[in-house]
Image (cartoon, rainbow, N blue to C red):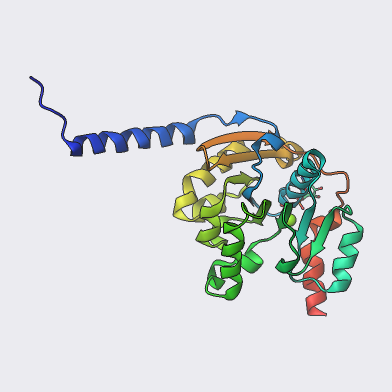
Length: 248
Ligand SMILES: Nc1ncnc2c1ncn2[C@@H]1O[C@H](COP(=O)(O)OP(=O)(O)O)[C@@H](O)[C@H]1O
Ligand SMILES: [Mg+2]
């Protein structure tokens, strides 16, 4: 008669199966999908990657997709702008995309673009009132039916609270340094993103490509995004304008 498996053995096997499953997903080829199918609503999406790799353009294109399918407005949150700059950026974005300076201006049932999220959600500032408020906003994103798009170079700069609240992580091309210095929890994912983009030939093809990690049903997808119709390079350089203004 074979001895009955102890609970400890069962637990060990369970952990081994989980670890095998994790390895299989990390090593698998990402399934092809359309951008819009990969986006939750409501939800929280983190967009990461090196500078000038297409993060901001992707966020605008997601807002475009949600607006054309669900007729929902969008919010472009720019906390460091003054009113004159805000109005100037409002003129180059669609009327259904509101450029905001204060979080109290965020509407329910909307896509919120929180670009260069690290500026306000910086890990070092996690004790500040700002971060607490951000936490709350993340928690109620579902209740307020918002899709929040956080954009950052890499997750080390962001609060763990933000990282653990996300439903999807979308990568644009990371650098080799990102995969080296990424926070431990994210290291395998960023390595995967680095290798994924290394396999894409051509600068434009790389800018179009996205690697999506679905955190709800753990798995990777790949898709492409185009530029939204209102896109101009000025949207790419918003932060330069704010910094120049701040110094002058
Ligand atoms: N899907 C795309 N197809 C073609 N060009 C793109 C695409 N996404 C971005 N670009 C170009 O790449 C540049 C950087 O894009 P941007 O979104 O501002 O990058 P990031 O926000 O990562 O710094 C812009 O000049 C933009 O026109
Ligand atoms: Mg940008």
